[in-house]
Length: 351
Image (cartoon, rainbow, N blue to C red):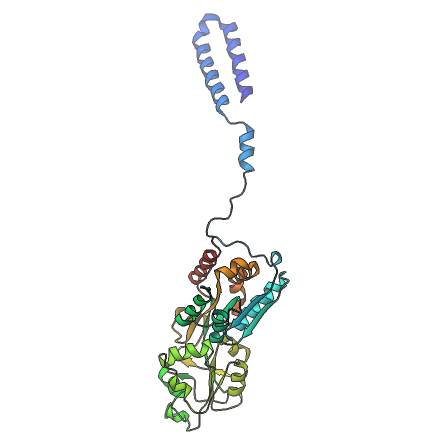
């Protein structure tokens, strides 16, 4: 641009010499053009500000965004206990956390949701409680009594699997009412449906400390556990593998547990529909399968702030759980549910 200005100045000079006074008008116009161009040049930014803008620092992480989990940056042990249903998912997440650099130990005890909350809220022995149901008021009160405030993190969705023996060729679907009969007062399958054989029903149920038991009682018996607890020929166990083996070994048995345990043993069991709906990712998420339920982990803000490894593990869990959960045998929580869990993490960390 500066070259153009110089050229125009030379043109003005030449015109003045060559034409004398007759070129006065042309000279004046050329001079005006020179003035305009010179002003434009003066106003143009130099290369320095452009370069400065190009090398500006990148934007920082916005408020409300989760920081990156870093298993290599924290140390110490993490103790978790609770739901046998959540156990395989937490186990998978702990294995991945360790494989990505965490040098501490993650302990996961499968003792049932109720027992997990007792260790977390009453004894104060654990850093994280695994739960296949939401915490109850009395459990939250027990936490408050020892100075803990439970923070809830939704991590997935389970569809409760109702299973029978593969040799059972007469049960493919039960209504919720029939399911209640099968786990309570019905002595034979004919008592559930007259078209079924008059063979005694062998029942296999998670133990009363299990969140799976609590959920089943809520969904099938309207929160009244008396009928199933007093039913004949019923075996209760906190170990889902015991339930699998029981159903596998008896043609006329029926049992229930988390969907992941069914998938692990699908060649040994037959899963049935409830109210005509089979458990799938879609029916679990939209609630059309009557026995779908949320899965949680719980911690406490003070624990998370005092133990960086606990906070980082939960962050890692929430970040990568959807990459693992389907392979484990459960279904992802909705984006809204996971975002709410992440918001709870940020609030617990004072962010």
